[in-house]
Structure formats: structure tokens, C-alpha cells
Length: 435
Image 1 (cartoon, rainbow, N blue to C red):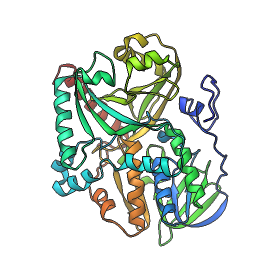
Image 2: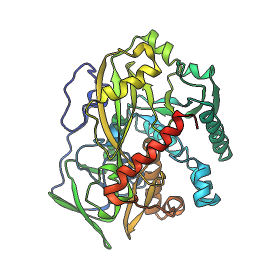
Image 3: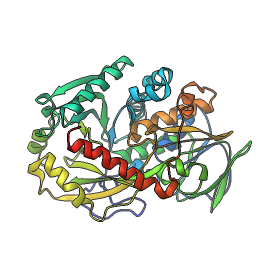
Image 4: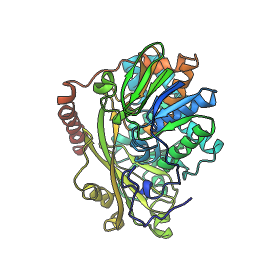
């Protein structure tokens, strides 16, 4: 892998992140120019769009991907890099809202996204620092009881690569005084997300797909052969798949009020010595805690601690990311309280009101998927496979998501942020007083 982790200059296409500084070489892809015909046009070259395009290309479809900036520019190339199985709401919540049949269908697919990533990394020899193991960490007994219920629920749906951890055994994964226990998911893990997107893009092109960068979509016109328009050209296709997620903008008005952009921040420390890494995070698994406003962290391949959190509703970037995250880092690992921070960046994910991914058809021949609500690395890969199945005539699994009711945020774009902040304040207050 070509890397110079101490260099602090970045290519314009990406946020000033550790990932951009350590990205694998990638070609500069041309913008869309003129009229193009294809079987399927995918809007967005993040994980959702790339997974959809690759799933379709593997099935023999001609695919064109239209990206506003560059492959992996949005959340897919900026996130914490954690392969977190399941959804942002547990399966018992899915069952209470939508019924046992829906819970059974979603439960059967809850771990598939991470498996798809592993399959593709192996098949296409993608160099992205993939490592197994993810831990949900409990800060109190209530959270630990919830993890026990989650494990039982997942096991009831056939997912058994799980191990409950007590306050002693969790130290093999995160050697801190914070946690009373946790849940190890051996089918979880972590990855260099930008390099994963670049590898998947290359795989699409190896199968004959085409990717247009620097081509923001201005509108999508439905019909028997829908058309995707940019300032420089248009793509006419048999099917269109919209995968803009938090960065879709105004291109598809029908989707704007169905998700809310939420900013999360990540920072990367200076490289740590091997003894420190082995002492603080012996197993190499990634960690996320169970708070409503959670912290998440992992070690990079070059021994930097990548530490994230700092959720901001509405998608605004804090004035000082390091100042926002450093107290959380110091609380977790006091010996790193003064560690040098070499990179700090922000990015947006898309939240739905239900916290369940939103998939469906806008009109005949126009599909969409968005709103993974913090579980995007894995669920995007599942979504891409499900959309490809539906386009190929296999609707059952896609329909399991598409049939779930989704609601716009109350108060529309004006009030969705303050109302969400009020809700988050309520849950954080409960956590602080131990409820």
C-alpha cells in the first residue's frame, strides 16, 4: 500500500482525513459529458451505490455510476470504519413496530452486510486493512442487560458468533476502567473505508461498469426509461437507483424530508508504540459503547488510535473537532490524554425517524436506499445486494424493507433538528442519572 502518513497535504476531492492521507492510488475518472445509454444508472459512488453497481455487474448488467464528487467522498470514505452488524434499532423493536414476520426477515439478514464485505475483499483482492472483531461496550449494568437481550435475540435468528464479556474479559479488547462488560461479535470488524470504496469501484470497472466523477445530479425524471441529468450530460437507463444518502441534496425532492443529515467526527492520534497498542487494545477488535451519543474507536494498521463520536444533528461541523473529542479520549484512555492528534475530520450520515433503513421505489423503475442511521458500512452492502436482486426479478428480500412504514421528520426541515436535539437531550439525561 502506498502511504505517507506524516504528510499533511490532501487532494481536493476528499476531506482532510487520515483515510485520504493513506488512500490507495486511484484513477481520475471523467465527468459525464453528453448522452449515455445503459441498463442501470446508479446515483452516488458511496457504499450503497457501489454495492448496488457491483452486485448488478456481477449479474451481467451494464451499469453507469454518476457521482457528484469522487468515489468515497461522502460518509463512505470518512466513517469510523467499523463493521457493525444489525440495525440501529434492535430486532425486538422491529417486531413490536412491524410484526414477527418483518422481524424474522430482517433478522435473517442482520449479519449479511459484513459477510458481503469479506467476500468482496477476498474475490477482488481489495487492500483495505480488514480485521475481524467488534465489541459493544457497556458502561453500566442496564446497558449490559440490554446487550444480553440483544445477544439472545440475534442467536434466536441464527447468529451465534457472539460472546458476552464481563468487566474482566472486556479488558482483552479495551483495557480501560470504563466498562462493566460487553458483547463481542466475531463477525464484526473494521476496515479502511475509503480504500474499500476504491477497491469496489475498481471491481465494477473490471466487470465493464463505468463511473463518472465530478457530475452532480440535478434531477431524475421517471418514465419507462428514466433519465438522470447533470449539468454536463444525461444517462438514460432501464432502471435508476438513487443512493445519495445524506449528500443527495435537492436532486430528488421526494426523499429530502425522509432523512436528516447528522455529523459525526473522527480524529487520529500520532502513531503509538507497539507496547502501548498491545496494552490498551490487545485483541485488535474495534469498540463502540452503548450510550445514546456513543463513542467508537479502533487501532489503524499503522498503530494510530482512530477515535470518533461527537454527534451533531443537522450535519454541521464543530469549530474545533479535537476539542470536542479529546475529553472522551482522555476519559477512555487517560494515558493518551496528551497524545498528539494528527488528523481530525467530520462527515454526515443520514438518520431516519424510525432509525430503520429506508428502501423502496419512488416510481416504476426508480429505486432508492438511504438512512442507515449509523450502521452504514454493513447495511449499505446488504442494501446494494437487495436492490440488485429486485431489479433482477427477486423481490422478496428487498420488499421486506420496502414494506416498512417510513415517516418524514415532524416539523419538516425547519423543526427536525431542534426536535431531535430535544429527544437526544432526554436520552442523555436518563443515562447520566442511571435510568
